[in-house]
Image 1 (tube, rainbow, N blue to C red):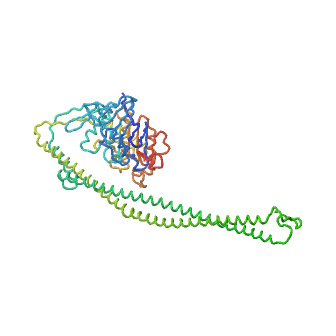
Image 2 (cartoon, helix red, strand yellow):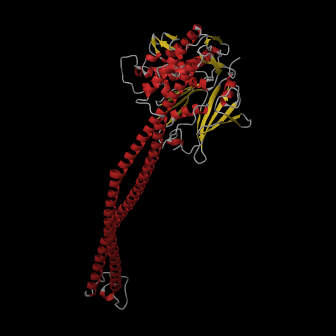
Image 3 (tube, rainbow, N blue to C red):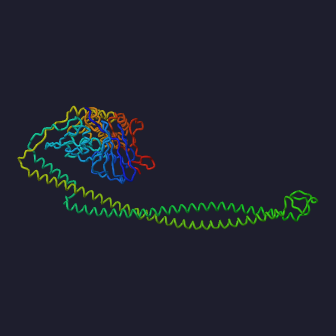
Length: 607
């Protein structure tokens, strides 16, 4: 029977006051790329959060105002699942298809069904699976869906680590993590393991506890303080942080007030400059009009004087109508009556002189206004310069200084909190150590005879990874095998963890995708999707180098994407990267966060 799979359809954030935001994913290859600080890695952590991880989401400024995260999943059976969770953590609101919504706990509990882990495991056919919890004590526990998540979501800080992709690096987690890997590559859990009673080596346990205590004390970077002293220090730091935060807020308010004043002054200054330019244009046009008036007056006066001279001439042919003296009738007016022309010219001169007088008054008023505006401009320039000096020389440096103090206090608080956690762990280990010493020496202890992974299975799995690396153009990938001691792959006789972080990232990607493909091909249990954060980022700015890290001169990135683009749609891959994928991908769902507020989809959250 083919195991069920699940794929991610949509991740969303909703708010009672802000615009909701969603990311849609499709079967097959999904690529989320774009500028830094646009929410790409936050999206990966949000998906992890919606699969039961973490008490609350990372607190970033862009998520302020959003109160709920939603996740839509589709199962290979066709069921549609909708999950909602408060952004500060807590339980889930769960809805399947058209059924009524119910509440599911975020914490795994094998004894009850009302938790997300049990529901997802039941979809995958792993509800009854058990894994080995402690090899020395022979303890087993039920499988949690969170045991699978490290194989599904590989964060940016994890993908470059030098330890095995199947292991978290935590000493206490080695046994269950190896059991989970064995379950995935074989389909067999640890429910059949037999516990064999053996005397327990108390000395070894005590030595291990002493070693852990010594390591924790070394991490303290100084003397181990008492819990009361640390508590008092944390209280003082909390008070200082609150006080410093108030100081930063006060300075920010003063700075905002100054910025508003500067903006108002700048706006007024622009208005004054506009009016001065406007007046200059009017004065220029009025000067031209005044010259026209002057010319018109001169012309009319010439007409008037000519008319007066004509009235004193002897009797001759009329210069206006051409009549000879004998035919002239001085008792009547001809068409060119000189007196009426003189009167008209005189009236027009008076009219123009009145207009010229009014024009002069207007010009005088405009010049007066112009002078006043220039004085006001000078005053505004001084005020603007003063407020700019206050901003740049006093308020801005003061704000930066106080913000730095606030950051220093927060860092100190983190260090003290870390010391508090270490002190608590040391105290717990000391208590455990005392318990071992108080146990009866003849108390029978237990250990577990565990089976080992088949070399045939490990060989098949290694060949799948080798197939991927060769297809991607990884250098010297012709010989890949699984090192059972390190629980990691070896590539051409070189352990995966001994490579630089760039190669560790791409080989970690090969491990995770290879495991997914291996399980799908063999019909083994695997949720059916993988998210990888920054598998190629380390290559983005590499300089040419003759060493084996010189991936920048290869076409590995293009081959990597084209291989994933050609995979079957039953497999869902989500890649998070800064760099742009090849433009010729045919099937990929590409989501681009521009980082530019003027371009569509600036980032995960609307601006």
